[in-house]
Length: 289
Image (cartoon, rainbow, N blue to C red; front, side, top):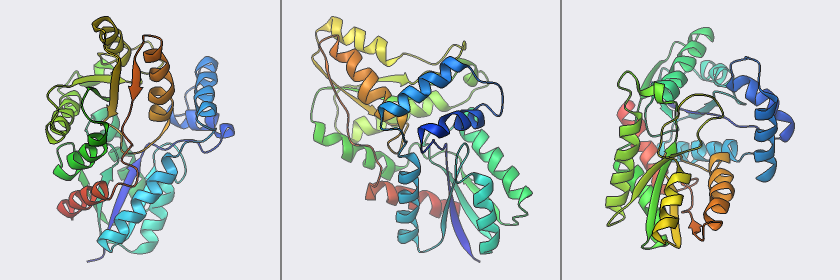
């Protein structure tokens, strides 16, 4: 049986000129807010006008393909190569079974659930007969935990604030496991890195009227300043490569917020091309196949 892996990610614009189209895909074609468009353009301009997410996703797929010796495809929900575009390639390849992995370790119906639904729709529309066996979550995969711990250990001792992307509170209304899985990943990484203590916060709350999951990073930094802390490390264990929520939100927005309160902010290197992360993806794919 011919097997393959499909990695699915959020997608991100590659030029400032692409931001408006990108946001249209994120919104599902709904009308946008000009102030939001202006702010998002500002954020991408601040990190050089382009997100490295697509480049890192391609690199992760190539590394996994080299390790497994089977085809590894990747598709984006909101930018090129779109999942639908990738499905055309999968159909032409003749694969019969696919391990589907969303490149976010923790499951939420609002995020991973949506990725899976969109991918299955694209599979049917493209006439792909291959079965996709999904890894709905890999938040506790031992090699993922070790990959994060490897990046964190060089920072040494001190206050560590783990983070994951916030979601609207309503996302957890029906027992969604996202918040619990994020905290479980943080606790496992802390244990692997031999941390005596750590904190956890949700970052990158959306620009909507919804109530978003907290505590926020800013509220934690305010508390640290009141306690007299001078150095804090933020470790985003909800993300597997560099993109705007790391390069802008942490490296610029939070770093400036911390500096204004007398705190030096540090961050471990993102997983990006970590061989241990590649090994983690191989383990997850192997279980699916």
